[in-house]
Image 1 (cartoon, each protein chain N blue to C red):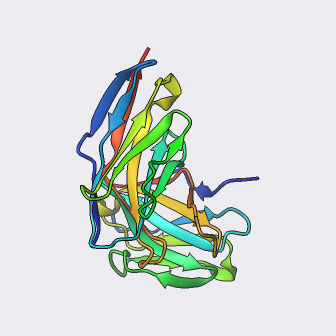
Image 2 (cartoon, each protein chain N blue to C red):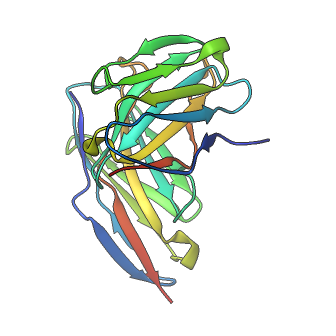
Length: 115
Length: 115
């Protein structure tokens, strides 16, 4: 079974440009999460989808970030316009809905570099 | 809000030896989950071990075990008989049953294994 995949693996953009990150969760996983690790600091939660609905977006830093999960399958995270402080690694994770353990399976991350 | 602290940015261990990675956390909750995740270089993060706070018995997974001290809010990871493949970033994480499924991570510990 395929794990969580993320595309691209690495993106280098200039300040002010737009970038869209994609996450494909494990098939059948209704929970989808976005996290990011900025400049070697802690991995921080961004938001949580249950199917196509945003369950919790308390970690989204500002309105330059837009996450979508149309159809409850893959998700995109758009940064527009990108700023230097957005550089970091963006992780996606997915998990089954309603299980007691609810283990989150992580993707390999997208490394975003804003110059 | 909960916080997780990993006080050791880097650790090294000789192959076949034992190493302990530290993690402390701050919470006012009595029920929660704790995790150790491993991220090998250029690979995705995988779950190593989990601990439910209501369980007094320390979790064990083969060569990996934890020392869970609830009163001290400490959750250290012991790796026995270290192998070269154990070299990775290790992240301690906390999950509250009252805050959806979001994980709160520590800053990570880079473990190097010397042959």
